[in-house]
Image 1 (cartoon, one colour):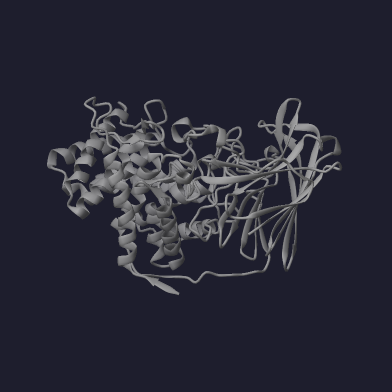
Image 2 (tube, rainbow, N blue to C red):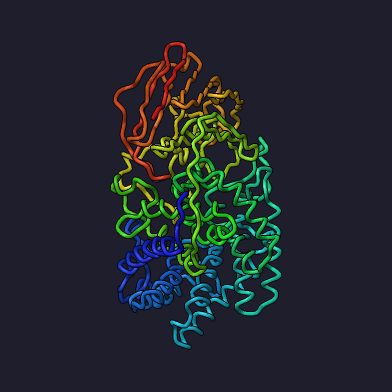
Length: 575
């Protein structure tokens, strides 16, 4: 075991934070037009994202720590630019092209932290101006993000945090009461395996399979951190224990390299391997809890290490291979995640012990009925097989008994499914690829052209799966049909998949009706340079194809296999 000192953690966190803040300062507009001046330009989206003013907090933290006036000047200019996003009712818009105001909650927490921790950097008139904006946001939040309002549960959790912080800051008991109501509501949404649900509407909707609306990325980087901050603000021991329980369940979905597995969640279109592209991050919450349980502190450290690896040119990229693919970094990732690092540093670091990496070659599997998903492991491999049917939007997460993730302890992600078909489901919050021709789907799938349309088994929300286990192998059998993006089943398109995970790799066997054998294929993208793909049955079609996918940000090598005349195929993936 290795002990990390408080100084090592502090130095690593702050080094990354300062690198990000330097990049934000360099991208700050100095245009004379007040609608542009002070905003942060995005090199990927060629715009100013409406939420960039939330970076006032990390900029003030860096200003106070370094004594460098450039960060203070940047924070003041950014606050002034934020007036462009403020509405007459005190709320803040997501963007000038978006009417969504729920993001006021994130702006309020950031502005509170800037004032609470570093407000002495402002003169009296400036501080009053910042407090006035914060007060207006608080009034809007108190009246608009309440139980029953049209927002996903991450907003309820975030407003529990905001109402607790602002209630204490402004001495408003009504806010404190509202915070407790929202937090209690969130804590009541814990699934049978301890996962927070509510990333859909209604929050407690059960699907045909009995699944619940869950997004592991939002849980890790928005909802659970907000609930943890709420509990700490109140000093509520019971709420803190509830947070620990939710976090322990969440940590089952953190990969050993610090990544969050969100390969099939309701909002996996925002999956960035390290988290979720418009969320804040987990460092602050996990370090707060890590004082009592080093497993949480270790998770914060591993995730921060991954963020460092994904930072290029001072900005946090949306995945490990953005630079290799020539994709620019969207600045949204950086100004959001800078807040969590600043909050972790303001809360204070401490010594903790990194646990030894566990190696277990035995086969294991756990079924999550609330996700209709198997999490399996054998040797150095981890694999998810997903039949999840909680729909967010058309073409979103994968289903159909797909392998949504294959991970290996030496190579990292081998398969990382991302979206079923990439589309701008939230145009203000996603990137378009630089090279659309090389942008490919990252999900393994049976695919066919039927009636002039593309259909694939990953769109089948009705797929059925069952498990077999042995000491040295996990086998999952899937029965599915080919479906369009609308999840409607095509006639006479029933197919099968059998996955066998052993210590030497993943074997995939499948079949389609013989009548479809001539125009059906199994398409298998793997992260480039991680694994060997060996066809065992069927025919390799042409050359492998190289590409990239923004979600979750990997360069890919795609192999296509045609079934034999009986409609059967097989392939093995091995590291």
